[in-house]
Image 1 (cartoon, helix red, strand yellow):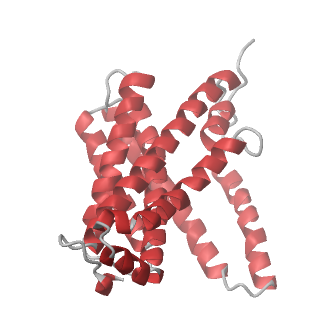
Image 2: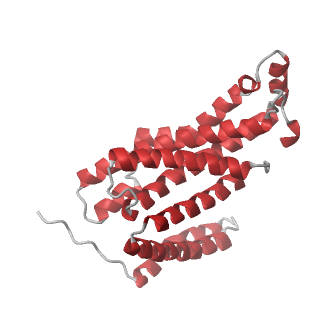
Image 3: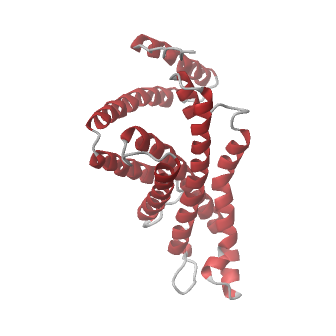
Length: 263
């Protein structure tokens, strides 16, 4: 049985799709949410940014050179680092390097395992595989790091007296902040765990849906989606853990004192 042909989308059809955003704009106006400007700008940015990256990816796919792939990955990490740091409620000196290190290591470890062991892409830098997979891994790692960092910062600010009391009782710095670290990691990982519990029941994930729409076998799309779910879980855990552990080093002195002025 032949696969159904992929239905092409023309510019005028994309313009019709904007009607979906217009509904949200109408709701914003009716309810006085004052989101009309942001929705309009966001829609324009969506089109410009996606078309822009589309042209870049088309050129990279055609060139098929490892250094272009690496350059794109570096640019993606730089953007993700900025996004993760910007979500902290209070700026933290060195947060950029902390986020860059956490995101780079978590993405490299997860991507390397998926590319070399699971999917076994040859060559390893095949842009058709490595860039989309890296994007999904990095996106989850970025979100988890941002959630963990914000929760850690908030808990340390609210429970600074508790931390200093634990330090005064002889706890080491890492042990004194461990309850906050644990809470931050749970906050970062719960959305991923919830998604794993409901995947395929409440929603069909984006990659799986895209493959099915592109004509792939549903069973093949499911197998790829299982890999995606597992790698996102790994990226979430590694990214949030590295970010929190490195951030804790900034909030504690070598003498195991809490730097309250950073809070």
